[in-house]
Length: 363
Image 1 (cartoon, helix red, strand yellow):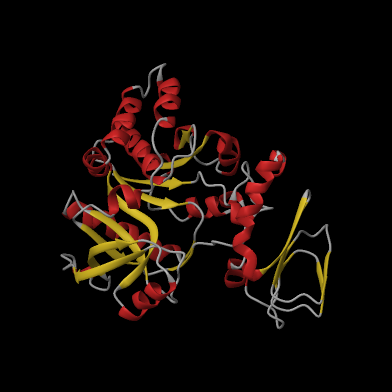
Image 2 (tube, rainbow, N blue to C red):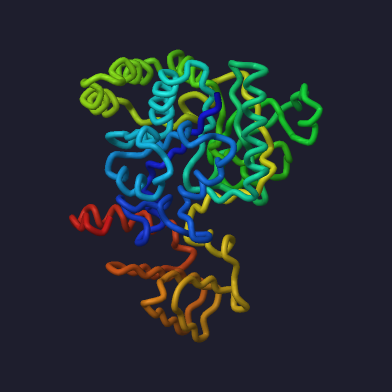
């Protein structure tokens, strides 16, 4: 059966001051009246029943996630005791799913992407499940056709087209994967874009739970051994203690480095939907649009001689900008960010300095 695993353990430091440890990016509303994690779960309705949706998050965020997703049963929350990147997260989820359903197929996805329309997303996930049914040891990933030479995404190099057995899938573009590429420098990114046979890596995968555990056993034996010990304790009184001990001992590693760069029999489906990873405050301009002066405004604002600026506040707090150009202004009850757009990456440095100063209440 098809199961969905939504990875929701990140902190979203680039969205400080609104994103915090206990209220990270995926719990915020950027488009419409639903948070990003709520929209991700909504996107699965009719494709994966709620009792086959697994939310992988950390113990500190559990209450907030549960509050936002009351339609999911308590068993849908998979709680990590500490952050260890995507490979341990996926391994732990796979171990739980194999216990529930030895033939489980996992569709793994982040919780903080904007994807439209839902119908096209579901078609792609169903195609991935069908491809796995045809070849059970197959790994399927979704690739995004690049629109510019991005340096912040990993890339997937595609090879020959995969013949599709079902004529109803003839419109889909499916290729064998030649290799995964790390986030490139500017020159390499431009070459990838010009070549026309590269996709952005969206971080959306599908495979049998048993298949990914088999790859991890072969490629990451220490990680696999730790997760195997955790799996042996599932549904016992020793589970929590075993989880905390063994998971903390795992070395953090992404699924790309751990498996995808070494595995064979990988195919990529060209995503038939629009996609945005909402990676920074500047994403709001793409998602919400701009006014005649190039500004993107959310909340109560007066702008005088203000151009190309993003302002995010609420309806109770007025933000006034005078003479600003290409800036970001984000107001929250206890902190305000003012930055030039070109310096946006430095927002991550804010989190580091807050930690150094002991201002943990602002993280």
